[in-house]
Length: 207
Image (tube, rainbow, N blue to C red; front, side, top):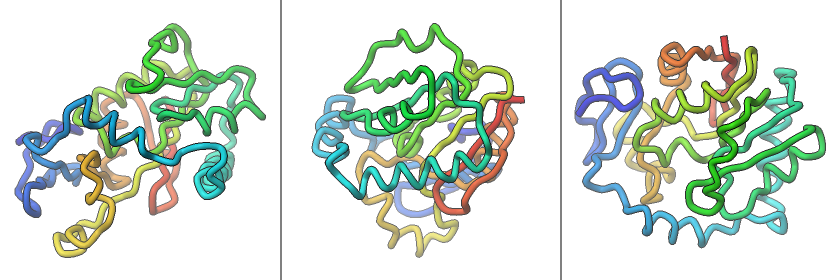
């Protein structure tokens, strides 16, 4: 397998997972990927709604961290919002225009006709079979000096800890990253890492 993030060689890591020798990304073998229909069914059971206080609090903490980088957020896109655009709702308190997209629940691609000062994508990249292509797509939609804020849990670079980790237990989680992974991918798409929290949030800026 070649790395879907940087194109380098990979090596067997644990079970049916492979680790990139260059950017440190970890991938589940494609033979275990779910179909589009099976993924949509799985996502529909998520309790990701405004009524879920824990879910809303997660987004509030995410936005507090992102706001620390002082992004200009006049025009915002939430990419991969899921069945309920909770984050987009929260973003409307500060942004002039907020658009959202999800390939399963809000597939209208009209969002591609605009440029954005801030793009958010939370709990999305772990689901991607081709993350480099998606990152390049989002970079193309950013205005100059725009910010891309991502949330995805950074992986354990140890097979035993990875095996015990809860994150890969979700059958739709197929790709896992470190901050360095995003440094490598960002360099290929005109983005640089502005900062991260060491756990699950990273902010990139368009060069």
